[in-house]
Length: 153
Image 1 (cartoon, rainbow, N blue to C red):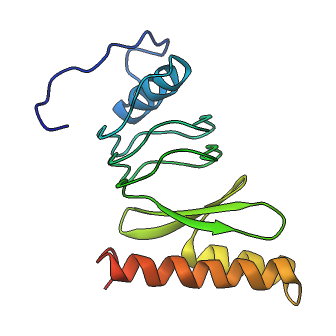
Image 2: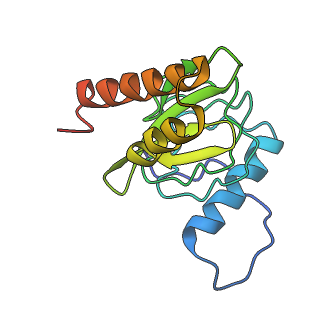
């Protein structure tokens, strides 16, 4: 990240003309499987959809614009990463938030929504329930933390 030096080389299979985000995403998945330390890595715009990042060291990583749809972030070290760990709902779902395309995105279990769509989803599917109330409260918390960090104005 700081020196632009290559930290590791990954063996990935993909089409030669695949987008850079797909190639970076495949390399990150390979690195996690190989137990590589991704602390401080620039993963901006990486397609991490479906990646098992459970327990990965992502401390200080740049995840701006990354696609986290379907990614498992449980237990990942996120210290200093541009990703918020927003806490757990009472049923164990972990909530995360990050910026992508100037929009705050919420990741909870298999769900991956813009903040507005997250609120709408939980209002429509869990209205009047403890999980619904907790989900909306966590979205409010994510928005407030994003404003404090200067991600939102």
